[in-house]
Amino acid sequence: MAKKAMVQRDLKRRRLAAKFEEKRERLKAIMRDENSSPEDVFKAALALAEIPRNASKTRIRNRCEVTGRPRGYYRKLKMSRIALRELGSMGKIPGLVKSSW
Image (cartoon, rainbow, N blue to C red; front, top):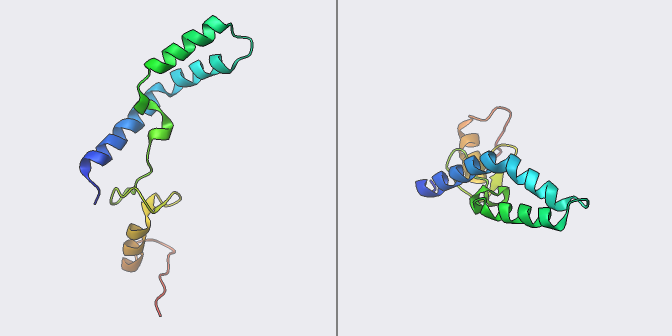
């Protein structure tokens, strides 16, 4: 199991990213727009800098939903390789046949 504080920190980042997503996209669109005046671009850059850094999607870490492990993560299954192996051995994942020879 991962540290509970790390899992909670990641959940906080997900909430912040969802909260500021629309504002962040709006400000970035102003900065990318070629027709925007340099003053507007500068204001948008300052406003973007005021948004918390943890509100960025790139700060979110994919974690196993079973154990919270941050590495060895399968996106399709939303779990780590270790949790997949354990649940597969117990027969709790439909359609997964674990071979052993």
